Length: 319
Image (cartoon, rainbow, N blue to C red; front, side, top):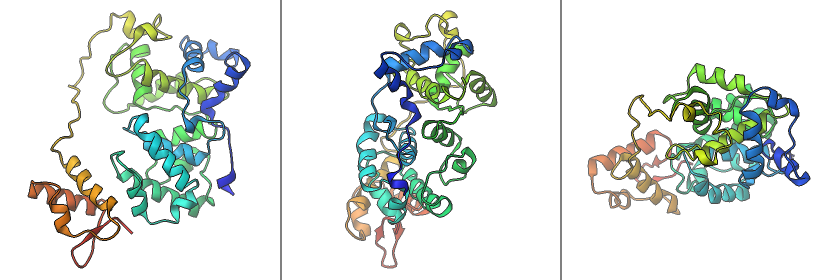
């Protein structure tokens, strides 16, 4: 059964090298790009000890982590991911419950449609793949809620596939180190994909390379502060060598939350998640003063499948 299957997570290939006293990479990697060896060695010494990177992490646990980590910091994901893995260690376990339970246990991760996507994904895995997360990139991409990044990440980290894994952190590292730009374009471009493919090492090391660049962007080459003194490639970074030219693209708008429809939806959804049965409309009305905004947010939750309105006018999580 898939629930007892254990496949080594590619993210922790470097830990085998740590145990032996040095990172385990093939020497030919350093011939491909001057960036590879320094980044791989840096990751071997600095990788965070995260449960979805453990040698016994299952493909399902890695898939869940990748969905949860989208636009959400690791520190917020860890407790929710742990709860999910205890409650739903396999796709079949989640698929057997109503979608509303996935929403209920999403906690405060934000963007709760991801919970519905994971539930739909679990059911698709059970129906199409016998309860096992598929290793094939195309099959992963065909799952509900799985986009190009997630498919590449799971194929790479869970199954040791050779794929260009492009998240925001990776794109920022490449923009600075190779293109000499402070920030990447707002949306992933074809040129970025070509660049990422050109930097991929051989099959043995590609999975570790993918997560190593991601980790560098998350810990050192961050959006707010480029800690160049701590960067393993600061002597060959195009952006630093050019004098760190200021970003001259479209204005980067910071995300606001207070007073938004998103905050209102979150308040309403919290009431539904904490309830043990249908919730009267009056109990929802008291959580937000702006009536038109509240009604718009509530209608949006229903339209998005995150809530249901019953014949008696009460509301509940989707069944």
